[in-house]
Amino acid sequence: MKTPVNLITGFLGVGKTTAILDLLARRPAHAPWAVLVNEFGQVGIDGATLTQDGVAVREVPGGCICCSAQLPLRVTLTRLLREVRPQRLLIEPTGIGHPAGVIDVLRSEGLANAVQLRNVICLVDPRQLSDARYAGLDTYRDQLSLADVLVANKSDLASAEQMQAFRDFAANYYPPKRLVATVRHGQLEPAWLDIASSGVYAPTGHAHDTNQFAARGWTFAPEQAFDLAKLRALFESWAADTRIARAKGVFRLGRDWRLVNLAQGQVTLEPIAYRSDSRVDVIAHADPGVDWRELEHRVRGALQPSIAAGAGA
Picture 1: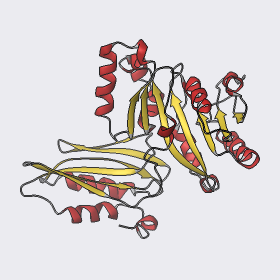
Picture 2: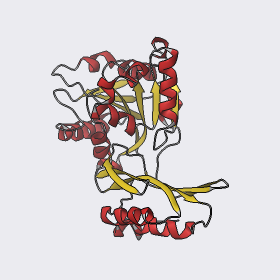
Picture 3: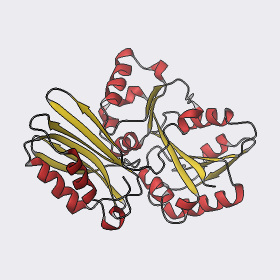
Picture 4: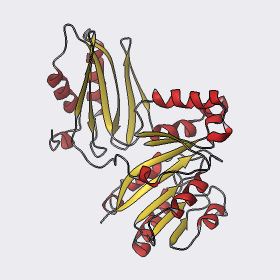
């Protein structure tokens, strides 16, 4: 049986350790949970803070588990799973790390058979969201992008304007979050760890029609990967198609992921830390309309050959 794993991310000082302590206090009675914590310094302060009865705590000190210390991360994870066999594992990356690297390790050969990645929860201090010193940092943007559940912590310290800015930001985020919440003192709901679990599922479509436009989207499991050249060609063909008003998506390309955007006839591709699933959304003019089955067929045609052959409807 695979061990459920959750990442609790967020920038420095946002309250990750407090949130984890609260989750541990409210875990099922006598449930053997484990915590893997990464301190960037040489002394693992958070590990000592988190230690309590019934919880196994392991540290990867002296480096960032998201990048330079991925081998120590793999070794520590393997030992922890073998020796403790926890019912759940919480991972707290350093606040200055890129957590996408942790997910890549969890999905790598060997570990993917032992763990099941559940929701990534990112805590945000709403007072920082509009601060250019944070918004301009790649790490900060990556943490927001990667989150399945986005939580405004320390909401009691933020102004009404700052809280509204957070809600507006979250409502317009792409891809959309599974849950957006507001809390104080890091009090996360344990149910958020598993809400809308990102397990393997078949691609699905959804449509939204108006008098002038029609929209449809498809999602693909994170195990499926796309071919970059075919994906670029697909979007460029849509850019030349006057029936397509807008298209955007996030796609796994082997180890890397890209955000692809078609707007005003221009196609852009940029790296993205998002790791939950590949997905694409297309908005078309209702008149003359498009053949949605043909569009879906072309999207599937951009999958890497070895993956596309086994994809189900």
